[in-house]
Length: 180
Image (tube, rainbow, N blue to C red; front, side, top):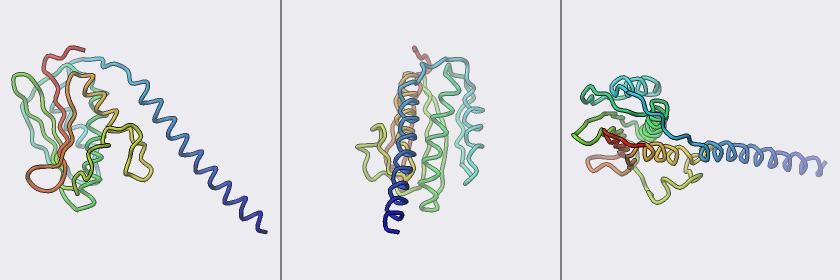
């Protein structure tokens, strides 16, 4: 009977490690194969509203900016915004806080931001390290891919603790005359 229990536990460990390795390989393949952006005209307001509407766990407050069109890869930027919004909502659900999504522009760039009222960032050193995650079941590639996509569009992606109040601010900046 002892060997059967040991065998079942061993098979359970093997299955768990195999699943983890499979997730790792899938994540690595996605990270290694990021295609360059295919810029086309993208209407900012519908893009942001579409992503906000995908979030069903809480209502997202919108701070709307000007109606405008940028040259960008809509699919890639949707993925960035989905990932950042998902992270913000998960953080805010921990503290029963809110999430605000907005955009503004100046003569050189479009700024899109997400403010959450979660616990904030305790350690920013590993935010963009591939495969580092603090979430159980997380792959550790969401922020890395998001940063790569925004940088491929010519701008930065920054995450930092909010100055006014609790939580985190994610901000991406896209140059208005991007060169890819």
